[in-house]
Image (cartoon, rainbow, N blue to C red):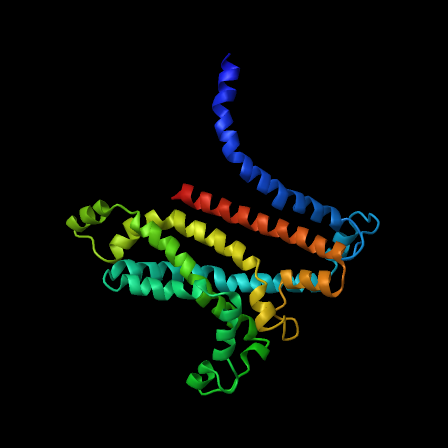
Length: 289
């Protein structure tokens, strides 16, 4: 009788979970398994060839183009993850601090995030034009930023930061507004001001939000594709060709679906491992604190 009663109690929960589980199986798990199987074959976009085992992965380990693309992806992440998180925090503090101008600041900071990637890249390209661009006009230069091997990726990173920082700002702003005001009032009675309030109240309360923002931003930065594909097409000299761009070229330009699937599978493993590592570091630092 108890077992029957438990099943009846669990039935509503299972019915609520069923749509999510069905979507998860249909749109994530099954395609992931098919991609892994495809990576074990010598297939093109139009035909499925014989099973080759781990041959694609052996080729991948020895492929300098893959490692170069992966290095470019890490470089882009290095340029964006921490700046995006810090700028999001600073913007949230400004919006929360200036109550009258807060809504206007919030709208201004968040507005670029609603733009489609095509519009963002057009704005960036217009501002960085060698002869008529705003940036070169201000600096008194005529530099072709996207054609410079040293500046192409940093310029893509700056454009991405301007485009996406509004999301992190909203996350930190929500965290700030969830901090009980009584904590600030009690600290003010003890004479705490400015930096002391931030160090002892604001930052400890925002740490979980900061780690969440870092994890989400790391995953988003590792998955970069559209910005480099539209702005630089991977150039100059493949210095901005990232992992997903290399996978795209392998699949749709070279029509090597099996090897592209191996790139995708290996890259997913790298992203998962880095996310788990970052989560472990966050838990250890939180425990040490």
